[in-house]
Length: 342
Ligand SMILES: [Mn+2]
Image 1 (cartoon, helix red, strand yellow):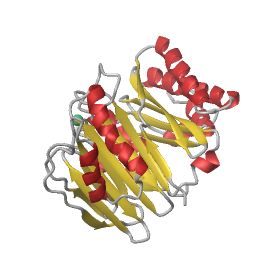
Image 2 (cartoon, protein in one colour; image 1 turned 90 degrees about the horizontal axis):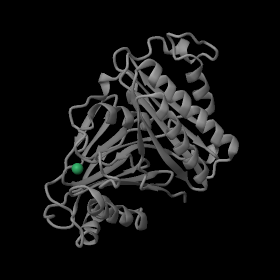
Image 3 (cartoon, protein in one colour; image 1 turned 60 degrees about the horizontal axis):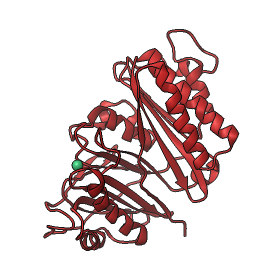
Image 4 (cartoon, helix red, strand yellow; image 1 turned 30 degrees about the vertical axis):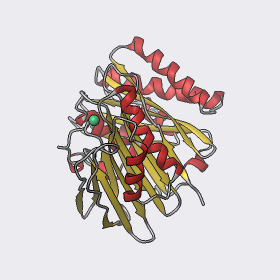
Protein backbone atom coordinates (compact mmCIF):
# COMPACT_ATOMS: atom_id res chain seq x y z
CA UNK A 1 0.00 0.00 0.00
CA UNK A 2 1.22 3.43 -0.94
CA UNK A 3 2.19 5.42 2.13
CA UNK A 4 3.22 8.97 1.51
CA UNK A 5 4.63 10.92 4.33
CA UNK A 6 5.64 14.52 4.42
CA UNK A 7 7.28 16.01 7.48
CA UNK A 8 9.55 18.92 8.10
CA UNK A 9 8.33 20.70 5.02
CA UNK A 10 9.33 24.19 5.95
CA UNK A 11 9.95 27.06 3.60
CA UNK A 12 12.67 29.61 3.17
CA UNK A 13 11.25 33.10 2.83
CA UNK A 14 12.70 35.87 0.67
CA UNK A 15 11.65 39.51 0.64
CA UNK A 16 11.46 40.89 -2.88
CA UNK A 17 11.93 44.66 -2.75
CA UNK A 18 14.60 45.30 -5.37
CA UNK A 19 16.16 43.64 -8.40
CA UNK A 20 19.40 42.85 -6.58
CA UNK A 21 17.53 40.31 -4.40
CA UNK A 22 16.44 38.13 -7.30
CA UNK A 23 19.83 36.47 -7.73
CA UNK A 24 19.89 35.15 -4.18
CA UNK A 25 16.42 33.55 -4.53
CA UNK A 26 17.51 32.03 -7.82
CA UNK A 27 20.68 30.66 -6.23
CA UNK A 28 18.78 29.09 -3.33
CA UNK A 29 16.22 27.65 -5.76
CA UNK A 30 18.92 26.09 -7.94
CA UNK A 31 20.57 24.63 -4.86
CA UNK A 32 17.30 23.05 -3.66
CA UNK A 33 16.57 21.74 -7.17
CA UNK A 34 19.97 20.02 -7.42
CA UNK A 35 19.69 18.59 -3.91
CA UNK A 36 16.27 17.13 -4.75
CA UNK A 37 17.70 15.37 -7.80
CA UNK A 38 16.56 17.65 -10.63
CA UNK A 39 18.88 17.53 -13.64
CA UNK A 40 20.56 20.54 -15.24
CA UNK A 41 17.70 21.21 -17.67
CA UNK A 42 15.10 21.20 -14.89
CA UNK A 43 17.33 23.25 -12.60
CA UNK A 44 17.57 25.78 -15.42
CA UNK A 45 13.77 25.90 -15.64
CA UNK A 46 13.59 26.46 -11.88
CA UNK A 47 15.95 29.42 -12.26
CA UNK A 48 13.83 30.91 -15.06
CA UNK A 49 10.57 30.38 -13.16
CA UNK A 50 11.98 32.12 -10.09
CA UNK A 51 13.35 35.02 -12.14
CA UNK A 52 10.03 35.51 -13.97
CA UNK A 53 8.01 35.38 -10.74
CA UNK A 54 10.29 37.78 -8.88
CA UNK A 55 10.43 40.19 -11.83
CA UNK A 56 6.63 40.23 -12.01
CA UNK A 57 6.43 41.14 -8.33
CA UNK A 58 8.80 44.08 -8.79
CA UNK A 59 7.22 45.24 -12.03
CA UNK A 60 3.59 45.09 -10.95
CA UNK A 61 3.52 45.41 -7.17
CA UNK A 62 6.86 46.96 -6.23
CA UNK A 63 7.47 44.46 -3.47
CA UNK A 64 6.38 41.05 -2.27
CA UNK A 65 7.63 37.75 -0.86
CA UNK A 66 8.76 34.43 -2.27
CA UNK A 67 8.81 31.05 -0.53
CA UNK A 68 10.91 28.05 -1.57
CA UNK A 69 10.58 24.50 -0.30
CA UNK A 70 12.12 21.16 -1.26
CA UNK A 71 9.52 18.54 -2.24
CA UNK A 72 9.78 14.77 -1.99
CA UNK A 73 7.24 12.10 -2.84
CA UNK A 74 8.45 8.50 -2.88
CA UNK A 75 11.42 8.52 -5.27
CA UNK A 76 10.39 11.79 -6.88
CA UNK A 77 12.05 15.05 -5.91
CA UNK A 78 10.99 18.58 -6.61
CA UNK A 79 10.82 22.17 -5.59
CA UNK A 80 7.91 24.40 -4.68
CA UNK A 81 8.01 28.08 -5.61
CA UNK A 82 5.46 30.54 -4.24
CA UNK A 83 5.44 34.20 -5.24
CA UNK A 84 3.08 36.68 -3.62
CA UNK A 85 2.33 40.36 -3.68
CA UNK A 86 -0.38 42.72 -2.55
CA UNK A 87 -0.38 44.74 -5.74
CA UNK A 88 -3.33 45.74 -7.89
CA UNK A 89 -3.92 42.20 -9.17
CA UNK A 90 -4.34 41.14 -12.78
CA UNK A 91 -7.49 42.35 -14.47
CA UNK A 92 -7.55 40.10 -17.52
CA UNK A 93 -5.92 36.85 -16.46
CA UNK A 94 -6.95 34.92 -19.57
CA UNK A 95 -5.26 37.43 -21.87
CA UNK A 96 -2.18 37.55 -19.67
CA UNK A 97 -1.80 33.77 -19.70
CA UNK A 98 -1.54 33.66 -23.49
CA UNK A 99 1.98 33.09 -24.68
CA UNK A 100 3.51 35.99 -26.47
CA UNK A 101 1.07 38.54 -25.14
CA UNK A 102 3.22 41.17 -23.61
CA UNK A 103 2.98 44.85 -23.03
CA UNK A 104 4.16 47.04 -20.22
CA UNK A 105 0.72 46.89 -18.58
CA UNK A 106 0.39 43.11 -18.45
CA UNK A 107 2.13 40.19 -16.84
CA UNK A 108 2.96 39.18 -20.37
CA UNK A 109 5.23 36.37 -21.44
CA UNK A 110 6.20 35.51 -17.86
CA UNK A 111 2.97 33.85 -16.73
CA UNK A 112 2.57 31.70 -19.83
CA UNK A 113 6.18 30.53 -19.54
CA UNK A 114 5.81 29.75 -15.85
CA UNK A 115 2.66 27.72 -16.45
CA UNK A 116 4.34 25.77 -19.23
CA UNK A 117 7.46 24.96 -17.20
CA UNK A 118 5.78 23.98 -13.94
CA UNK A 119 4.26 20.53 -13.36
CA UNK A 120 1.84 22.13 -10.93
CA UNK A 121 0.76 25.70 -11.51
CA UNK A 122 -2.00 27.78 -10.00
CA UNK A 123 -2.62 31.47 -9.57
CA UNK A 124 -4.88 33.60 -7.45
CA UNK A 125 -5.40 37.15 -8.58
CA UNK A 126 -8.24 39.63 -8.35
CA UNK A 127 -8.49 43.41 -8.69
CA UNK A 128 -7.33 44.90 -5.38
CA UNK A 129 -6.40 41.51 -3.89
CA UNK A 130 -2.93 41.17 -5.33
CA UNK A 131 -1.43 38.09 -6.95
CA UNK A 132 -0.16 34.77 -5.60
CA UNK A 133 1.49 32.24 -7.92
CA UNK A 134 2.05 28.59 -6.97
CA UNK A 135 4.48 26.38 -8.89
CA UNK A 136 5.96 22.94 -8.33
CA UNK A 137 8.58 21.35 -10.59
CA UNK A 138 9.37 17.63 -10.24
CA UNK A 139 11.89 15.25 -11.71
CA UNK A 140 9.25 12.47 -11.89
CA UNK A 141 6.05 14.42 -12.11
CA UNK A 142 3.87 11.45 -13.06
CA UNK A 143 4.84 9.62 -9.82
CA UNK A 144 4.46 12.70 -7.67
CA UNK A 145 1.06 13.62 -9.09
CA UNK A 146 -0.42 10.11 -8.90
CA UNK A 147 -1.32 10.38 -5.22
CA UNK A 148 -4.97 10.56 -4.18
CA UNK A 149 -4.17 13.48 -1.94
CA UNK A 150 -3.03 17.00 -2.53
CA UNK A 151 -1.54 18.91 0.38
CA UNK A 152 -0.33 22.47 0.64
CA UNK A 153 1.46 24.16 3.48
CA UNK A 154 3.23 27.21 4.71
CA UNK A 155 5.47 26.67 7.75
CA UNK A 156 7.76 29.54 8.75
CA UNK A 157 9.54 30.70 11.90
CA UNK A 158 8.90 34.02 13.60
CA UNK A 159 11.17 36.74 12.21
CA UNK A 160 14.62 36.50 13.72
CA UNK A 161 14.51 32.74 14.39
CA UNK A 162 16.14 30.19 12.09
CA UNK A 163 14.22 27.27 13.56
CA UNK A 164 10.44 26.99 13.36
CA UNK A 165 8.70 25.77 16.53
CA UNK A 166 5.73 24.49 14.53
CA UNK A 167 5.74 21.19 12.65
CA UNK A 168 3.31 19.29 10.47
CA UNK A 169 3.00 15.83 8.98
CA UNK A 170 0.76 14.03 6.51
CA UNK A 171 0.67 10.25 6.19
CA UNK A 172 -1.56 8.81 3.51
CA UNK A 173 -2.45 5.90 1.28
CA UNK A 174 -5.01 5.68 -1.52
CA UNK A 175 -8.06 5.94 0.76
CA UNK A 176 -6.87 7.41 4.06
CA UNK A 177 -4.90 10.43 5.20
CA UNK A 178 -3.71 11.37 8.66
CA UNK A 179 -2.77 14.99 9.21
CA UNK A 180 -1.01 16.52 12.20
CA UNK A 181 -0.16 20.12 13.06
CA UNK A 182 1.91 20.75 16.21
CA UNK A 183 2.91 24.08 17.77
CA UNK A 184 5.68 23.75 20.38
CA UNK A 185 5.42 26.19 23.29
CA UNK A 186 7.34 29.40 22.64
CA UNK A 187 9.71 29.49 19.67
CA UNK A 188 13.11 28.33 18.58
CA UNK A 189 14.95 25.07 19.09
CA UNK A 190 13.13 23.90 22.24
CA UNK A 191 9.74 24.53 20.65
CA UNK A 192 10.83 22.61 17.55
CA UNK A 193 12.03 19.73 19.72
CA UNK A 194 8.51 19.40 21.16
CA UNK A 195 6.57 19.68 17.90
CA UNK A 196 8.95 17.33 16.08
CA UNK A 197 8.60 14.67 18.78
CA UNK A 198 4.93 14.55 17.77
CA UNK A 199 5.52 14.37 14.01
CA UNK A 200 8.18 11.70 14.56
CA UNK A 201 5.55 9.66 16.40
CA UNK A 202 3.21 9.98 13.41
CA UNK A 203 6.02 8.93 11.04
CA UNK A 204 6.44 5.73 13.05
CA UNK A 205 2.71 5.06 13.40
CA UNK A 206 1.07 6.55 10.31
CA UNK A 207 -2.11 4.51 10.89
CA UNK A 208 -2.69 5.83 14.41
CA UNK A 209 -6.17 7.11 15.20
CA UNK A 210 -6.27 10.74 16.38
CA UNK A 211 -6.98 10.04 20.05
CA UNK A 212 -4.23 7.43 20.24
CA UNK A 213 -1.83 9.78 18.46
CA UNK A 214 -2.48 12.44 21.09
CA UNK A 215 -2.01 10.11 24.07
CA UNK A 216 1.17 8.65 22.57
CA UNK A 217 2.44 12.16 21.77
CA UNK A 218 1.65 13.16 25.36
CA UNK A 219 4.00 10.42 26.56
CA UNK A 220 6.63 11.24 23.90
CA UNK A 221 6.61 14.96 24.77
CA UNK A 222 7.03 14.50 28.55
CA UNK A 223 10.66 15.57 28.46
CA UNK A 224 9.92 18.58 26.24
CA UNK A 225 8.22 21.94 26.73
CA UNK A 226 4.99 20.55 25.36
CA UNK A 227 2.90 21.53 22.37
CA UNK A 228 -0.56 22.24 21.03
CA UNK A 229 -1.44 19.41 18.66
CA UNK A 230 -4.37 18.51 16.42
CA UNK A 231 -4.77 15.33 14.42
CA UNK A 232 -7.33 14.51 11.74
CA UNK A 233 -7.78 11.20 10.00
CA UNK A 234 -9.83 10.94 6.83
CA UNK A 235 -11.18 7.65 5.46
CA UNK A 236 -12.71 8.20 2.03
CA UNK A 237 -14.25 4.70 1.85
CA UNK A 238 -16.10 5.27 5.11
CA UNK A 239 -16.69 8.92 4.06
CA UNK A 240 -15.61 9.86 7.55
CA UNK A 241 -13.16 12.21 9.21
CA UNK A 242 -12.12 11.79 12.85
CA UNK A 243 -10.57 14.72 14.67
CA UNK A 244 -8.94 15.29 18.01
CA UNK A 245 -7.10 18.40 19.24
CA UNK A 246 -5.46 19.79 22.37
CA UNK A 247 -4.61 23.47 22.60
CA UNK A 248 -4.62 26.24 20.07
CA UNK A 249 -4.58 24.61 16.63
CA UNK A 250 -7.50 25.84 14.53
CA UNK A 251 -9.12 23.32 12.21
CA UNK A 252 -12.04 23.57 9.83
CA UNK A 253 -13.53 21.82 6.82
CA UNK A 254 -14.74 23.65 3.72
CA UNK A 255 -17.23 22.33 1.22
CA UNK A 256 -19.56 24.25 -1.08
CA UNK A 257 -22.38 23.16 1.23
CA UNK A 258 -20.75 24.87 4.21
CA UNK A 259 -17.89 25.36 6.65
CA UNK A 260 -17.41 23.38 9.83
CA UNK A 261 -15.21 24.48 12.73
CA UNK A 262 -13.56 21.57 14.60
CA UNK A 263 -13.28 21.77 18.38
CA UNK A 264 -10.08 21.24 20.39
CA UNK A 265 -9.87 20.94 24.17
CA UNK A 266 -7.66 23.08 26.42
CA UNK A 267 -4.35 21.72 27.58
CA UNK A 268 -0.71 21.18 26.64
CA UNK A 269 0.35 17.88 25.14
CA UNK A 270 3.32 16.61 27.16
CA UNK A 271 2.43 18.35 30.39
CA UNK A 272 -1.21 19.08 31.04
CA UNK A 273 -3.70 17.00 29.13
CA UNK A 274 -6.87 15.89 30.89
CA UNK A 275 -9.70 15.59 28.46
CA UNK A 276 -9.10 14.09 25.05
CA UNK A 277 -12.10 13.66 22.81
CA UNK A 278 -12.21 12.32 19.28
CA UNK A 279 -15.03 13.60 17.09
CA UNK A 280 -16.36 11.98 13.92
CA UNK A 281 -17.77 13.85 10.93
CA UNK A 282 -19.01 13.00 7.49
CA UNK A 283 -16.32 13.56 4.82
CA UNK A 284 -17.76 14.56 1.45
CA UNK A 285 -15.73 14.44 -1.77
CA UNK A 286 -14.59 17.97 -2.61
CA UNK A 287 -13.99 18.91 1.03
CA UNK A 288 -10.87 20.85 2.01
CA UNK A 289 -9.40 20.45 5.48
CA UNK A 290 -7.54 23.51 6.77
CA UNK A 291 -5.49 23.41 9.97
CA UNK A 292 -3.29 26.20 11.30
CA UNK A 293 -1.29 27.25 14.32
CA UNK A 294 -2.06 30.46 16.21
CA UNK A 295 0.56 32.31 14.16
CA UNK A 296 -2.33 32.78 11.72
CA UNK A 297 -5.34 34.90 12.65
CA UNK A 298 -8.76 33.30 12.62
CA UNK A 299 -10.82 35.98 10.89
CA UNK A 300 -10.37 34.69 7.34
CA UNK A 301 -13.13 33.65 4.98
CA UNK A 302 -12.26 31.60 1.90
CA UNK A 303 -15.24 33.00 -0.01
CA UNK A 304 -13.75 36.50 0.14
CA UNK A 305 -11.35 35.22 -2.53
CA UNK A 306 -13.04 34.44 -5.85
CA UNK A 307 -12.26 30.88 -6.94
CA UNK A 308 -9.77 30.16 -4.17
CA UNK A 309 -11.80 27.36 -2.54
CA UNK A 310 -11.03 25.09 -5.52
CA UNK A 311 -7.45 26.22 -6.07
CA UNK A 312 -4.30 24.14 -5.42
CA UNK A 313 -4.04 23.62 -1.62
CA UNK A 314 -0.57 25.18 -1.71
CA UNK A 315 -2.08 28.34 -3.19
CA UNK A 316 -4.80 28.40 -0.52
CA UNK A 317 -2.19 28.11 2.25
CA UNK A 318 -0.09 30.88 0.68
CA UNK A 319 -2.98 33.34 0.33
CA UNK A 320 -4.06 32.80 3.96
CA UNK A 321 -0.45 33.23 5.11
CA UNK A 322 -0.01 36.41 3.06
CA UNK A 323 -3.11 38.06 4.47
CA UNK A 324 -3.49 36.66 8.00
CA UNK A 325 -0.06 35.77 9.44
CA UNK A 326 0.17 37.65 12.73
CA UNK A 327 3.91 38.17 12.32
CA UNK A 328 4.71 37.68 16.01
CA UNK A 329 4.79 33.88 16.16
CA UNK A 330 5.83 30.85 14.13
CA UNK A 331 3.12 30.15 11.60
CA UNK A 332 1.84 26.96 9.98
CA UNK A 333 -1.07 26.58 7.56
CA UNK A 334 -1.88 23.15 6.19
CA UNK A 335 -4.51 22.46 3.52
CA UNK A 336 -5.48 18.95 2.42
CA UNK A 337 -7.89 17.79 -0.26
CA UNK A 338 -8.51 14.81 -2.48
CA UNK A 339 -6.87 15.47 -5.84
CA UNK A 340 -9.23 16.51 -8.61
CA UNK A 341 -8.28 15.83 -12.18
CA UNK A 342 -8.01 18.98 -14.25
MN1 LIG B 1 2.18 29.56 18.31
